[in-house]
Length: 137
Ligand SMILES: [Zn+2]
Ligand SMILES: [Zn+2]
Image (cartoon, rainbow, N blue to C red; front, side, top):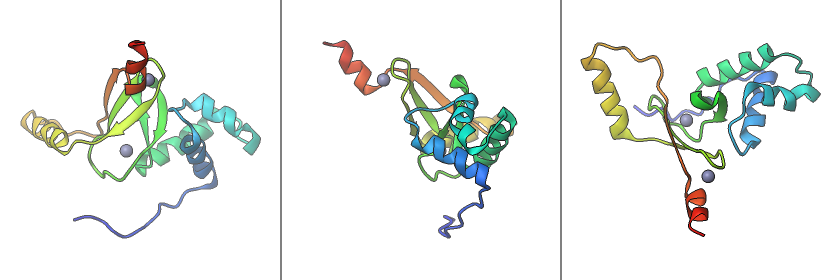
């Protein structure tokens, strides 16, 4: 069932600019941080950023990390699988993971309770490997 055709979504100039800012960022960025980066490209107001963000998210190119109210580029093609974000409380790094078993469990859970999921993102807060090792010094 895998779609192998390389149909790149058609992005508008603004969507591409927003995507590039996120792709070059080390951490997820909020809409205002993105806006600041893009003022030199003529962005003036948050709605311009939000419109681009929403469209990029629909295309599956970026995700919103809800607990940070920030956006990050999707690290790969995982179709319907909900991404699992491991968020470091110390350095703010965010790593995206997928788990086939987990997504099946979520699907079963939703079906059994008659719930129709729209979208799901799983976020785990804690400390990344780097920050954990620093602590033992
Ligand atoms: Zn993703
Ligand atoms: Zn860390």
